[in-house]
Image (tube, rainbow, N blue to C red; front, side, top):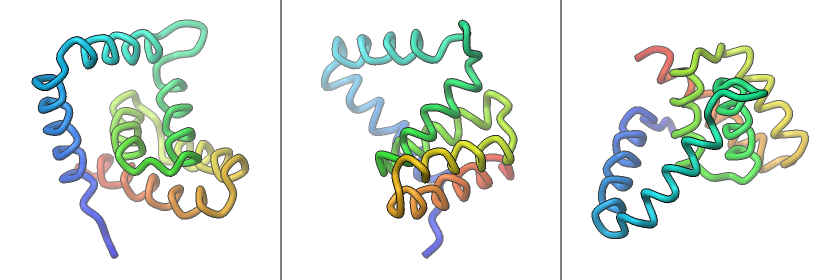
Length: 114
């Protein structure tokens, strides 16, 4: 079954806006954490997005992998970098991560083709 990750990303964005209305202080705090965690530092933002993508794959979080596949693309990650990141996630997460790894690469490809 093929998935439209571009549409899924729009759904996630809409859900986040809904959560901001429902729990503004919590979401402001979460967004501040995310901004701080992914900012350039000893590791650049692209590397941090690739790390987040790998964790999303290993944890089997579809919404997370869509969000971070898009962010990795926006930060300039290449398909090869994404594939290597997924390889590490599979090593850490086993068979289930291999399934989600394919999902993550498909999502990245859709954002790259947009």
